[in-house]
Length: 243
Image (cartoon, rainbow, N blue to C red; front, side, top):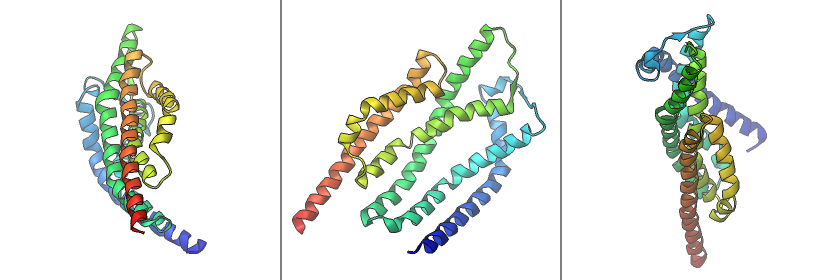
């Protein structure tokens, strides 16, 4: 394909993704008040009053919830369009691998969101509340600050949960090997320590509560990489012996 043909194909797939995103956004705008009502009715928000410190805070919150919902619903279709754009540059086995990992990436993303919201976020909020009470300060939260604090925790965790799928795919196409992951382990652990310290409260227990799942994700990624690498090597041997 020529450069113009590639750009035309890219534009077509971007428009398709935007169309699905807009449709999902419509559903998100309808469900946004219900989602907000649910978040307000469960801890830690059930015993607090959400305040707005700007005329735009309510509208910004309404649109943010709708957009997050739309992106989550549209993610499988967007990933499929991305696969459709790059598949012409992939080999047959790489095409199959990329398409096969699309649903897994969505599942991992949702698991990361659930882990961040139901486990890490309440722990972080409880820690900050204890600090506030120890300083004898009055807890007066704005909706923008509340959700900003929440998203800064759960979004990085949701992205981190994509690590096993990314490692499996890169191993499948020959970019990564288990040996390379083993050599990078000490550096990977250092990065995970930094990530855990950034998205968790500044105390040892909270750091460990975030760091341990990240380490488990990395080790699971290494294990999956070994499995994929072994299958890929066996397939190459069978193909070579048949030739």
